[in-house]
Image 1 (cartoon, rainbow, N blue to C red):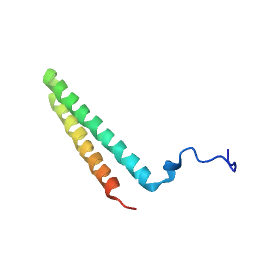
Image 2 (cartoon, rainbow, N blue to C red):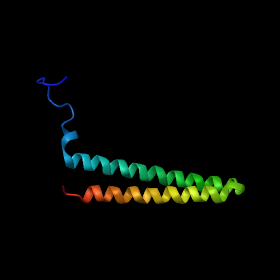
Image 3 (cartoon, one colour):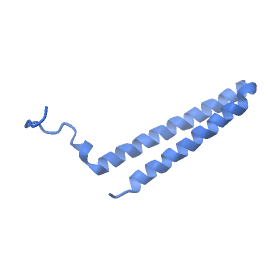
Image 4 (spheres, rainbow, N blue to C red):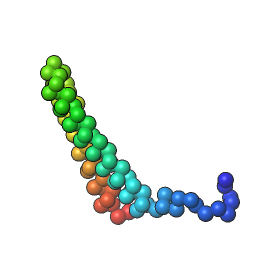
Length: 81
């Protein structure tokens, strides 16, 4: 509904600080998931020697993306705007 007298059910959604905090938490969660994925690729590499190089490469990319997400989270936490 538009134009009604109903209050915004999600007032925090318009608060820039709350949005930055939510994005930072999400980036942290993505980083944690990517770290877990990297560990899974490394474990698979131990049991699949023929695919080990490719699996280790996937693990390295997952760790790199995790680091990117942690950097992103830190930027969102540090941004006062």
